[in-house]
Length: 338
Image 1 (tube, helix red, strand yellow):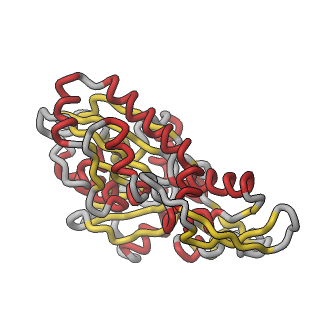
Image 2 (cartoon, helix red, strand yellow; image 1 turned 120 degrees about the vertical axis):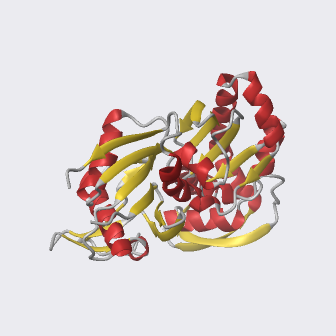
């Protein structure tokens, strides 16, 4: 029986599957919709995401991951299974799968990830820590005795790590990332403008209006929601300064985590990072001005990887080629008897 190698970035916000030469062949929101009357899944991915805030009472729109870990095991397993079937069709293939996990995940959380992959039909399951996958996917050579630093900002967690000789030297992870940014934006407008906005509205405002370095106070966008004073529909003009102010505390928590990793890194490798720079990956890397913000904080050049959203997924697949050389941050955890 032939084996298809798949790399899966099971993120809080998106699930991305890569194959072949590490090319992403599926990219869907990590959302699944369940009909409570028929007890059947009615949609997943983008279709389910479009139901958020719009589904009738008998349809539960579920995000099975929170802060980078599985919170609804049954729905996570079903989502992974459906995504794999969408990729490989109904062929009798039991794929080898590499799945990424946050660098500070617990043993119980690791077990939940493995069980999800096995229940989806995986023949062999490997786990790789997100920073290692992110660096591989960004095209960095982590096998040399040279320090590389990555800041991977996903939907649930931000993972920071320094690698050398194929292993993690120092790492940290904080639960401040895309979803936390959205929640902070919602809270900001509720507290300062007495306006309630939805999660998707906050997400759209973050993408279109965020500027973390020298934000303008000029009104550049409009959001819709409900007035907390009148209870009626309302619209509000917003600026880059609004979004920057809303998420500054979250960004500063990530900066503090980066500082902690620097403090745990040997000085020789810190010198390498100063020469080479810090690479940013994940969806959070797309926030305008983030690279300049980090550069200003540490005096170290910072750059955004090509296709930062797909770096981890590419890295999970590329890990197959170097799995025997990776010293830590990568492990073979399950082999079926098929």
